[in-house]
Length: 449
Ligand code: FAD
View 1 (cartoon, rainbow, N blue to C red):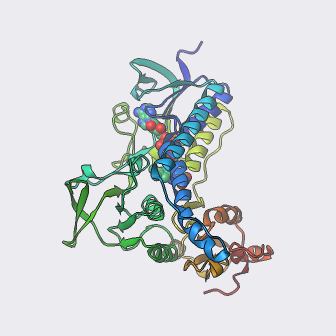
View 2 (cartoon, rainbow, N blue to C red; view 1 turned 120 degrees about the horizontal axis):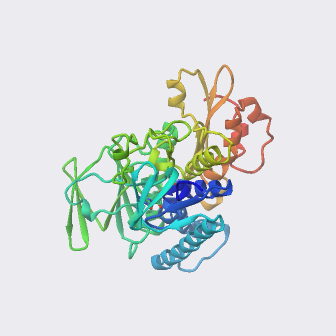
View 3 (tube, rainbow, N blue to C red; view 1 turned 45 degrees about the vertical axis):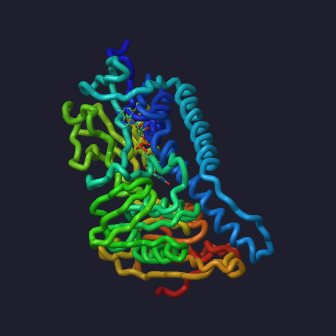
């Protein structure tokens, strides 16, 4: 009989923790998992899934308009926020219960309580001490806000999913993908949106053409993007908020949402006390196999602040469980991970941006297409699509593929297979186009820009 209560104790039942727990249990480990909020974690409860549902809702507005020139007469379109939120909540409840069933079906013990470490093998949870041979920290992250006067009047993405009503005027602070996505959501649902960002352009880290192109497209839809702008303080008067900006001006709105970054939720769970090294930004330091500075403690997902995406957390959890409990060691390759921004219009990217490739010293051929999608020739909507390939001149390897426009996230997933395989431009071109599609541009761009 083992000296420990469990072979594995997982702290956090989000994307990564649930996958690791189930796979480890499948390998025969006795597993317990603690969750202080709701099983499913950020992605299912307050991230990817509810966000995408809201984004779908926001697209209908344009769909109704676009249908007119196609011969449709649509009656007066009205939007009801509480119907959307109730149906979204129902779907989240359904997913939450599926996740719980997956855990119980895998014979993982679920402890619905906050957990903290008291030594490298002991977790304090729900008023008792539980021991385990291995510990996996998968506690995710949490929105971070600057401590300016009046910040208590602001919301984050967490609260945006549960607002009692759709605000008429919204200010979104931040320039990352969450800020950009919520700007599109609120705008599409009918709110007047201003996005305030302290940097030069939204979506820092993305290809510059993607950033500039998307900013223009968002602007055409009515989103006011104000760059190089910071909020100094927020004042509330009745139901209205006044934002005092760093240029001395002010603006008023009904809600202000901060999407200014997320911090790993690693504070206050005993990590430093037992010798787990953590960076000042809260990221738990791990090696390529997700091992922390304490050998029997591993960490995965957003709390390690590597690539903060659900499929990455899931893969890290899977690799951990196979390696430690399945005698099948493997590591996650964090290079060339495709990602999407569910903005309006959306973006999809994989591989290097032009600037990153140049910084790495590559001589490049750049291919670009900027066109009006067929759908909008008749709809009359002034929306364009951008596609871009970053190609290494000598080897002709496609180092990066970037797209802004309808269906970009769906298209980039398939393109990512080719880029990950190390396809050359000639191999892209050898694929006969699927016509008429937007995606065909990825195989028909002939002349470098
Ligand atoms: P999480 O899913 O955050 O899970 C951590 C869990 O640990 C949580 O349930 C938390 O309650 C629990 N926990 C924390 N501390 C303790 C404790 N001490 N005791 C017990 N339980 C604890 N990613 C994508 O790939 N695509 C997207 O479109 C996308 N959209 C997003 C939109 C938003 C608004 C946000 C906020 C995130 C989005 N993400 C998206 C990121 C994605 O949600 C995360 O990368 C992913 O959830 C990370 O998984 P994780 O397992 O590391 O952590």
